[in-house]
Structures are given as structure tokens and as C-alpha cells.
Image (cartoon, rainbow, N blue to C red; front, side, top):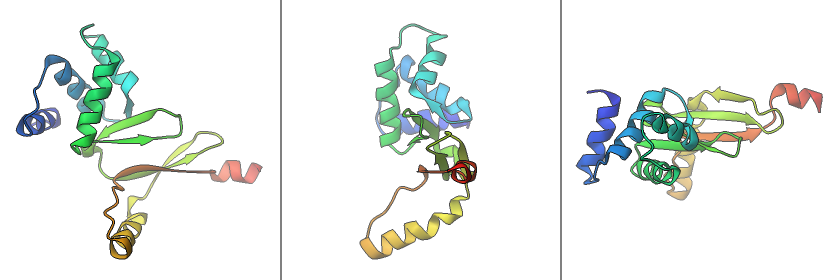
Length: 142
């Protein structure tokens, strides 16, 4: 079963209606293979039909995020990016000065998740997030 069909099946299993618009949005994010914004998904769907508005895209992405089928993250541009969980757990280091984004080794974060669970009983969702700061180049220029 393709990743797109897996997402569609998960929606149906949870009892959600699968309108043609919702299906096109799911297809767009499932086939993106990278982080995408709601606006990028909207543009892709608009190329196929004008029967979708940006509010429908946002509502569908919020639904998918709420169900744990996609993750959302701000990579420093002020726009939220989305990725399917097939993208895997990952962490981004975002330079607040030049905007550079570096993928960090996710294994560095695992001890933090364990400590939060042990000390606070808090189950942190650290599958996809960004840490703002300064990259080595910008830090050396300061």
C-alpha cells in the first residue's frame, strides 16, 4: 500500500469523510517528499482544481496533524511546514540570522525526551521540531 493510501485509510478508519478536496490535499503532502507549507499544497491542488480554498487546506492539515499523521514545524521563516511521519523523527537547527537550516542527529534529542518523562511524567512530542540559534558562520561574524 502506498504512503498516500495509508494516510487515506487512516482517515477512513477514524471515521472521517474523504471528500475529493481532502483526498487531493493528502496526495499533495504524501507525494511531496519534503517539508511543504500550506500555501505550497494549495498551489499544487489549485493546479488540478479550483474547488479548494486555502481554508480547506489549513483545516485538513490541522486534522492530519491532530491525528498524528503529519507533523508541523516552524523552520524560522514564520510559516509552518508540514511533513508526513514517513519523513521520520528529525530535528532542525535554524539560524535566526541567516536562515540556514541544518538537520541535526535526532539521537541527540532522545535523552531529553527520556528525562522529561522521568522527571515530569511529560511525554514530549519531539518527532519534528526546530531549535533556533546562530550557526557557526554567523556566530564567528558576531
